[in-house]
Image 1 (cartoon, rainbow, N blue to C red):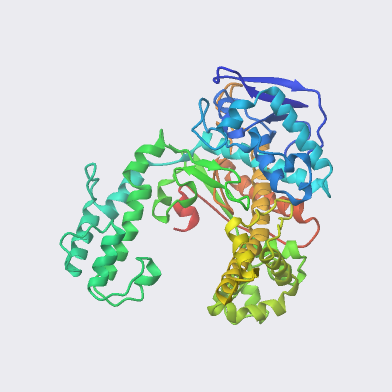
Image 2: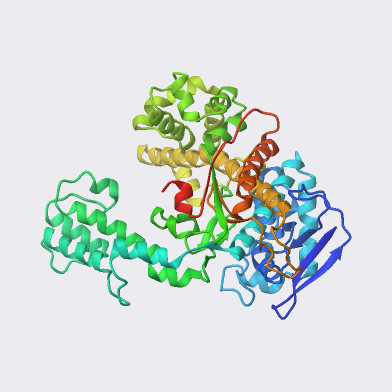
Length: 553
């Protein structure tokens, strides 16, 4: 059964009606649950959650549309080849008028009413039906939509946060809270030290041009103030500058202003952007949810009588590559133990650090340093895995599209890339143009090389989220709650996600069961994507009252 959800003309409430239409999309959730269909989960689901309504599964038309527009398997479909339409436009995050965008005219001409949504649903189903094979794309759309539900629920529930602990951390590192417009005491002390060491009384350390001029005046040949460049310099200003930059980032990104803005009623409510990165990874539109600094992990505190279960997947991308390439040797290296340690034990590389560097080089196209030195040994040990990413890189170098396991397509290189290639092929093209063309081709090849792995890892993570979400809900509440109560009261629920890591807020009595369910969900996600191929996705799982303790920070 389909439940079509659209917003009423007043923009404040939603209209829900049953649609008698059979749609063969894959299910991530209960088969018997109705499927909600709407234009945008982030815009419509929060209102339902506020009313105590939790949705089991849905189809997010906007997310699905974005996937299908780039998916190679449906590249010739009417949906993929059509001109810009309402579902190509970014939706406003909140009800009401949208910000001015390139697509405002499109949106104004064709509002996302029932007719528009039903037409889009039909177009998507027709596109997927003619894909070869359709099952993987259906699973991707279902998983993407399940991720959108989880993201909205995590924002609704919020990350339990102790403002007092956060404030204490800031005071210990920066000094007392400063007045508006002033630097914290510790930053001002470091600024004065820098002015003295660089003989620059008027130096503003927050100004990059000022800093570079001051550093060059004392004979330091710097081109930036990046950490790796500063570490190679021998000067008394380097240490205070490095410390100033570190603490300034904390103050700017997660200082008292952040605390006042993002933490209310003991909760930090992150704003995730599902599929916000071209590979399918999530982004964040506010609050820096994907960049939570180690210093502040201790501020994430479970409620009294509750605990945090923190789980992260070990060496996710190399394991995904093993499944993608059907590389049995690489899969065996990660079976039941640390993959990098197993590479050392097998004699592939002499030490674990080189195993990690070499594998990262294989995934990202490392061609220099230690990575390049050990890549030939890794290629001999795991030829199928290396051949898979090499093929993706060569396709990218030719300007071709590559895809993830479930069919998410990579974008094509832009007009500047194409012009560089044309310049090299022209009669006037010389060695300079040819060199630039080769560099551009190699750069795009490195992107597609990683796209297939990072994108498939994002699909595994979506499946893990969806299965964990389903299993947690099935555990039920620990106490009786009314029908209109807060949906996640007295029951375990997801509160945080970071690429390959999940955090569950759970009644402490249920924590051991939650640990097993999260582990089982990871196994199920692996089987969903890779079937019977023997690749494992082990988790590191910790349980504590604070995120910092669970992560060993």
